[in-house]
Image (cartoon, rainbow, N blue to C red; front, side):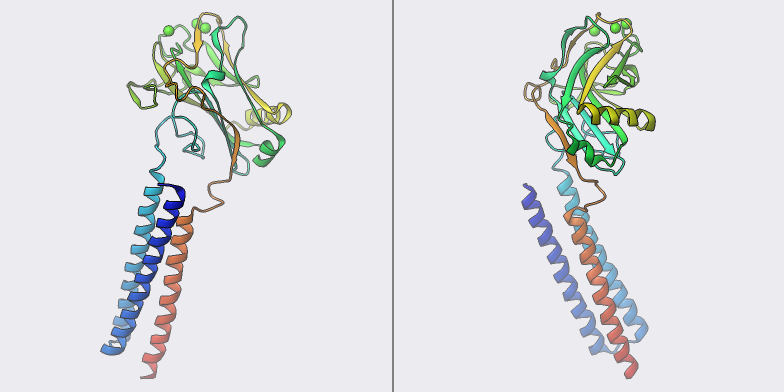
Length: 312
Ligand SMILES: [Ca+2]
Ligand SMILES: [Ca+2]
Ligand SMILES: [Ca+2]
């Protein structure tokens, strides 16, 4: 279902709820004049009707939001640990390096450096460059409100050898623009197949395992680290990813291994997304407008009926 079709469906559901609301309003007023019921029971009937209408509207809206949400497959690999949550459409479920930045103003910037743009081989120097994400123009960094609240970085690696018992356990750190973003052995990684479906090896509870395709998220909300990182991105307009290994040169790196060829060249430059709480989704606007409109209409109707009842 396209976004347009979803919107259309939502619009239809909203007007349906509204027409039922108007219909029921009519019934309430007709019933009142015909039966001349007491003020108290009329009030109750009106309230019940309102509650029913409200519930109907809410259910419809929630139901539709679930349908709209299911268009994006959700899983560990597609859910960033930042407040942004599910990553943007177009980011592959595994592969490459996903960077997710949340600005001080809650604006989100995400990027994906394609797997086939990353280093392959044995490192002869340390730290070793994995890849470079360019495109952090002043327009991109300028959207972040002058700094960062959170950052998360997703890696997919076959045979990382940084889990407990592996030869690089607690030996490797991830560096972004030279800054330490953590121990590879502290990252909880999930085993998947080449297409990003959950694999039989489950979660590592720390590290990228031997002979296993693992995907996991580094993350930080450390204000001092994020200030240094933000400044480095503003100054260089890029993010250089490196592995810092206490005993380099012993591991062969191939960031395309184990990943479906459909995903190895999936990448996108830094992209600004507005804060999720700033622009409500169409169904949220529709839901509150419908519910609010019904509430006002019912209140007016009731006031009018009470006045008339008082005159009798
Ligand atoms: Ca080692
Ligand atoms: Ca190995
Ligand atoms: Ca090593």
